[in-house]
Length: 206
Image (tube, rainbow, N blue to C red; front, side):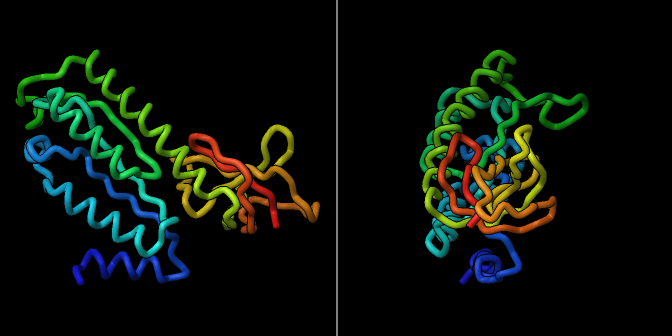
């Protein structure tokens, strides 16, 4: 068993740790990763994610990618696109490359136009919206612990489940509160999930 697998098991079997993994891959194409001076082993990433989901299919996996890095042609971009489509991350953030004066990356060629970088970002985000919705729909009828953060404009409590990081992922909204008890920020409640959108969940307190 590798060090990574031991760590994953420790996280997934420890009740005090949420099953949430943030794995910032930056890219998937080996040549772009090499230019970024990052480890280039997308197959290893696939294996680790498959291992996580084999143990706990409801674990949340987030990543961050960058598009438009110098040298990223259509082929390299489609490689990244297909990788994301295959792996199906629960959450994904995408950034476009910005050259910074005096950095190693500023001197790399060929450059990708700003217009093309924005286009590629939109394509990745469009893909991820559908993936996120699919992954969240898998949680309908499941029971989730939700940390209450506050109330919406209609006075209904909302919060985050274990699969939602504060501020960067979605929100879980409470459709009803059967016991009519007061809920306050910091309360932890059990919620049965009823609906899912691209990024958010809706459920009832049970």
